[in-house]
Length: 475
Ligand code: PFF
Image 1 (cartoon, protein in one colour):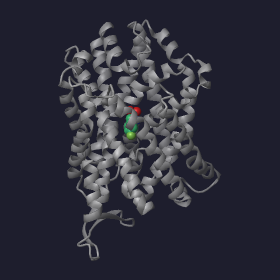
Image 2 (image 1 turned 135 degrees about the vertical axis):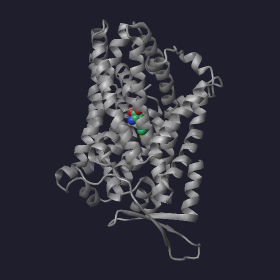
Image 3 (image 1 turned 60 degrees about the vertical axis):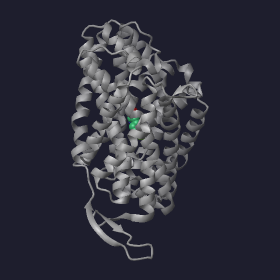
Image 4 (image 1 turned 120 degrees about the vertical axis):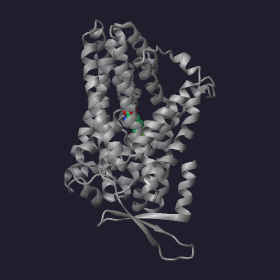
């Protein structure tokens, strides 16, 4: 709210930033009075850019790979037909996730600016839709940071050999301190800028994450429960494919995992100069899928080795796995590695979410990055506070449900789909075919198929997922 108020106030009374495409500059113009004075150029700001395509890919993989891959994907697979789930998941990712990702990147690169100003440049009245997306991503970030903070707490507890019990932890007010620490880590990264902060963090963290994951998979597969674990995870139950709930779970998981439809890739695309968007998006998508599948190969053998319930669902990461680590040999080291890896994944995802409102403030209202980051950080911490408090001694609940669970449903499930719908409609129907074609390499038959997918296929699937999620078919 704070952020929205600031932004709306700014649109109406103060300033606007326009883009001089030839110079690649952003020029802040200021209205001197409401009586129609000509705008005065205040200052020129060189727009930030990735240092290379690799930097962009790593940052986008960092955004996509998060708690959704390492914690959520394995249990969603387990609950939805094991190996058979991979069929609808693959279809969702390739047929709907990938095209939406390319569309976002195309809007970002073509308009050269972030979501609110990009939408405004497509149609003046769409800036409100851009603000809705900014609000949704900020609300998701609020509760995502709470989960990130639990991961940080576990990482520290394993590292310092101070066993942590989730129940006791959330019966205290300690989670609030970790919430602040996790928020600060994200704040510092985004404040440092696109290259120096976001790109640099991903350049270090993503390779480390992959190495830890490969090590953990190798270890897990040598454990006594490996055969049983892999069997449970991947043995396909094809009869489940006739269940619409399984398909809806696949669509929901694909959109959440790829971070599409939130204006993140649009913003990241606006820092991108050249390159083949399909190729780059395919790399991001494949990396995201591989990491998710590998995470399952690591988790289930451990769960079976420790004799835990594999259908522990949402409790898998914070209750079942930590106790699995206490049962097995080298468990402390493995637990520390696992939670630091999860923290790296969550941090780079949270960073990408924070960048959406920050970039909106910078691009649309000419805020300097540092001030924009501080403002958004404060707003997001406030938005996340009820979720944080719901897992403390206060146990903040609404209708008997912890606030965080409600936020996950309202913003992370319903809000995410609504935002995806907005982007696919604004981009697919109003940006103009020629403009999209210019970004995706011409207007041949492939692009015609692509446009049909974007205009009809993606919105239809999002709508079905929305209705399905509304009635909680997936639960
Ligand atoms: N893709 C991230 C994950 O898999 O954890 C989560 C996420 C990031 C969801 C950004 C939504 C979003 F806008």
